[in-house]
Length: 228
Image 1 (tube, rainbow, N blue to C red):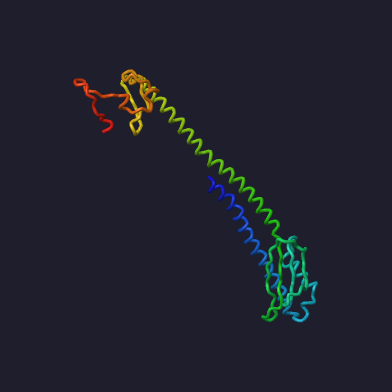
Image 2: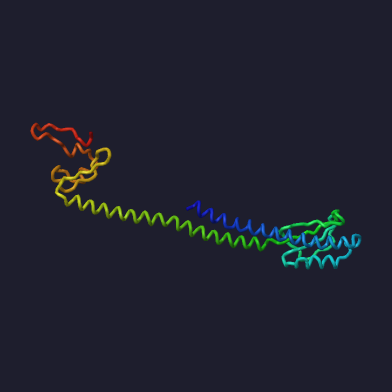
């Protein structure tokens, strides 16, 4: 129960985060590459002036693809100097992905996209809480089901024992039961009458002390076939 419930509580949030993060990573990288491809075409047409065309660069950042409220896109030259940016300033945590800009096959700069992962963190927390609740439910279920089955088995065993005791008490033969070491556990009423011992008196005593076998002709005490 502990292993299964712990696995559920751990795997659900980790699995969700891994899948969601991978999807977000691929999406941000794709947007960075699309923006970089559009800006690279602008560089080819105006290789010496593209750095100063801030409005066109901002337009490309905003449109290719559409700007998101939790994303910041920036254009940097080859020295890493900021040329333009579009989108809100983001606080950590965020995911950063880049794509290079090229001018005739040479690296001219890069596009950097930062995407907030706050929503991902909150969604992971929600999944973790749901997984914890599910884990508790599974733990309780796995713990209670065996107990219920055990209780049913115990009840059935008790009923069988009661029927056996009633049967032994009602038959005309003397019946004595012992444990593996030959210590008496039970005498039925006929055995009590024939041995002269009550069940409480005989319980736990060796069988040879309560039940003596004698030869009817010589009166000699006989060895016990049961012990042999």
